[in-house]
Length: 161
Image (cartoon, rainbow, N blue to C red; front, side, top):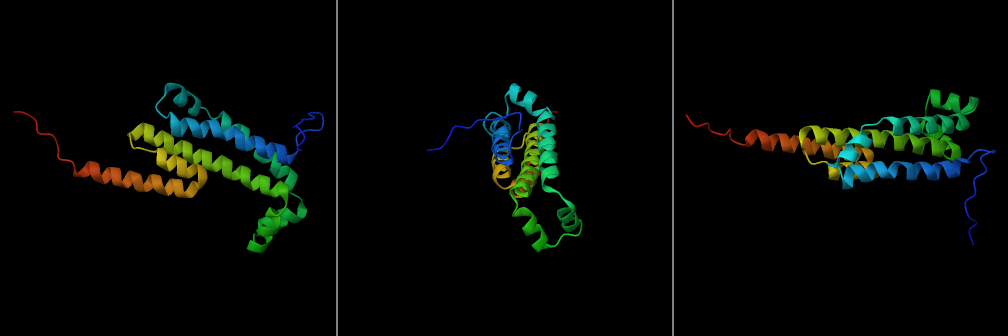
């Protein structure tokens, strides 16, 4: 039987708990962008940069716990084997995952605001960005190309003279 989660704030949170909380932290922003993108409260919340500040601070915390002289040296001149060894450590994996969370959310938010600005449908690209950031970005680029091509083929309305 699992024991209930208890947090001892005097000792700080362990990486595993912070990792779990960081995954939960980003979900409301993704839900707003995908489920209710046109709502005013979605725009207001997604207009804030505070979520990125929180995630970057968490990233810095994880990074400070995963870097030492050896890992700093390995990352300064990265080789694939060195990176693989670095990410085999839980603290380093949490650092890398938080990096993904920050950057994927940032790109997803950019796609969201581009959709708001241009009127191009973005839900599919944002959902893809949530699960595979670069693929979501590619999806948005292709969607934008297609929407632009369709708009260019529409005939100009004739004005009555």
